[in-house]
Length: 121
Image (cartoon, rainbow, N blue to C red; front, top):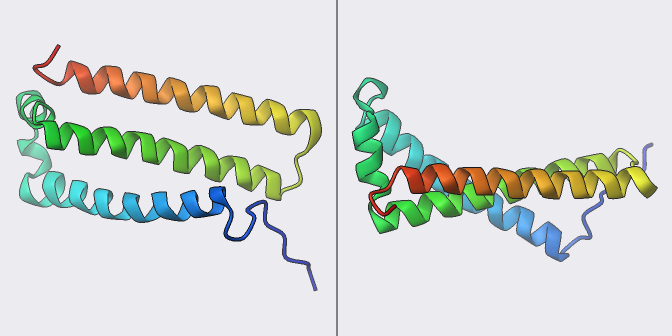
């Protein structure tokens, strides 16, 4: 029988953050789907409507938290999946830094787009 292995330390910080971000993402993703797929149908979504929503501080803050949380959750999940597959040494360090840089770039670009959709800038 195969031995169970996980790169997450049970009850460790990364383990806890992965579960915390998953819970947050489920709630915010449900909110996003209800608002943009049931309350407003796809044909009713316009650039002006997106600008109006993003100009509201609460909505903007929620979407920024969504961006940051989803990025962390995805990057952390990919990294730990690769570690679970046995990557180690120099390749592990290279992947860690590549994913970190990609995550930062994604957050920076997402922030730029979010700010462009507000009336604040």
